[in-house]
Amino acid sequence: VQESALEDASGDTAKRAIAIGRFSSSGGSLFLKREPAPAGAAAPSPAPGVPAANAASAAAGSGWSVEVAKVAVDRYAVKWDDATTARPVSIAADGISIAAEGLSTTEGSRGKASLRARIGRSGTLTASGAAGLYPAFASVALDARGIDLVPMQPYVETVLDIDMTSGAASA
Image 1 (cartoon, one colour):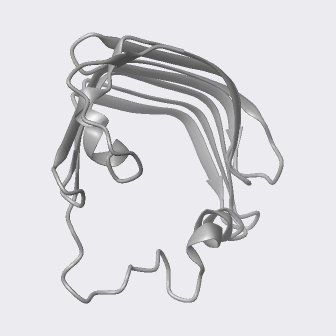
Image 2 (cartoon, rainbow, N blue to C red; image 1 turned 180 degrees about the vertical axis):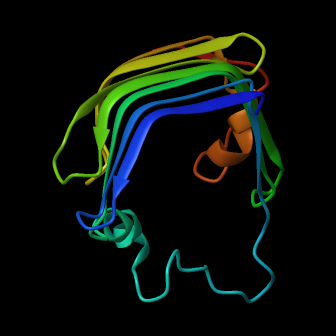
């Protein structure tokens, strides 16, 4: 991360509340790698005693409220490598920008969010609309153009017997 800033932040331990006026970050990169589970290993639970489907709800319902008035993330890159498929998957996105306002862990609250990214060499993805954190919610307009499908072949071949040599998705 080249630059990050937190502005107008305050906390109240008695009320168990955190308020952030603005969070911004730029020039970051993230590398995510999914390794196969060791032979015979059970799938990990996200938190002891909490079923996977309820982990996010349990974290948000911890009694603390967090409100963020504005979020600005710019010039990020993400690389995803997945070694759990028959053939490894590698997908990269860059030029990632995220803007959001009015985000809160208060149950049922809704804010606004938008995302813009380049997927692979020539694909683009934009999304904008309403978003909520608790429970997790999104109602967005999505625009995807020219996203190369070939890198996703290992996911597709688990359900369809096809071999992709080229192809792009737009929606």
